[in-house]
Image (cartoon, rainbow, N blue to C red; front, side, top):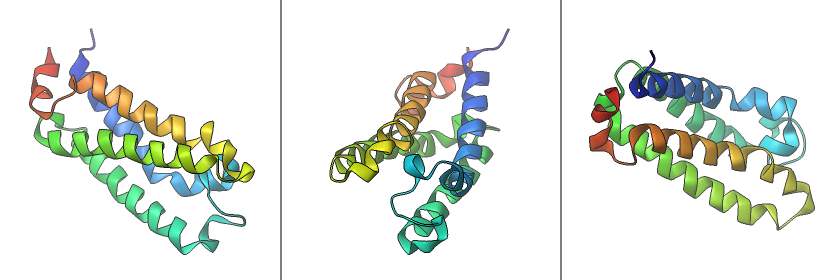
Amino acid sequence: MLGKYTFLQVALFVFGLIFCLIYPLAVVWPSGWAWHEGVPHSSQYYMMIVGIYFTLGVFLIRAAANPAAHGSLIQFTIWSSIVHAAIMAVQSFSDPMHMGHLLGDVPALLLVAAVLGVLTRGAPGKVAAARG
């Protein structure tokens, strides 16, 4: 039987992989993942976000091997995802072109926060307790 700790490991790996694939997501579904017109690399700001999320993705993948040792990283991922989603949700209403984000990256980031929050029971010190 799979325990909560195993689900946390799978979630960290899957979310890490998705974070590493932000650029291809913007190519396939620009209205849900890119904040500018044109190809993703046409925006220096977007490429900075791609770099940050790729780096976070690699660290989440590495944390999947031993989540209990990476509680702060997991909490950072939870809270930065909530803040990022909230800011993007508000900004989505500034231009009709951005409304697709309410069906794309905004709920995706909230899903990351919710899943990791439940699987860690909301506190870095409790990540180790999720083994049972």
